[in-house]
Length: 260
Image 1 (tube, rainbow, N blue to C red):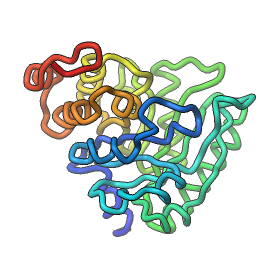
Image 2: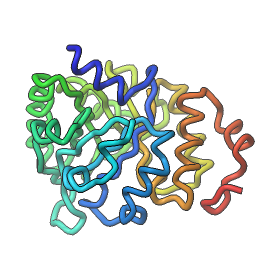
Image 3: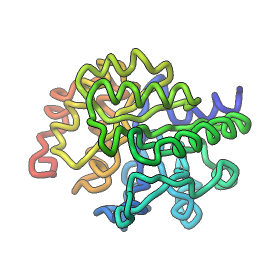
Image 4: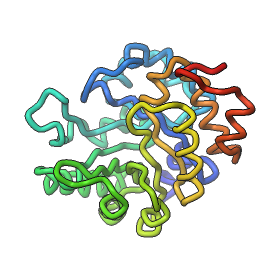
């Protein structure tokens, strides 16, 4: 499908991608989300795509002019609810297309009490997105009573692939090559909780060596004291083939969240 291929190339460039999710505001307010426009301006030279909810896209003054891929997130839940793992579809493929999306994304919590419904919704979104020629990013997380380990993350990635996702996002685990082995579409690792910049860069380098096509890093960029520098460092590793050590030496040490 020509339309899907063209859109995928805006998200994955030369087989690699740096995606910045900024959909966290529905789940929980995070530092940095008060300045979405400023963050996007700062990092747009280095990221390949951004994930946003429809309201942020609709009200943005700059998204239309950015030369990066736009992924509209279709599912949500809040940390204030009885079951934050119960993700619900809150937008449509058609509305995402009307907003100019290059892709859509759906979050599924494998092992949660509402897993069955979430899988049903993901399958339907993938089918509808296929019919419009728009890629689907499936954010697949082992949650609830399920441990996060190589076995469960491999299963989660495989489910996303089997239900029709074009890109699968999962947490990083050791033996990541095992995850990629069972998922025949591009796999990106989640940035996860806030961590030191040096640790993040090293994790990304190892993930790429083990078959990941890139990363989807949110709060480790937008909550950073220097989002542009972190995005630039990640870009060097993902697109320029530099090691974490080379990037740190080239750009300067990251100490206490700030570049020297």
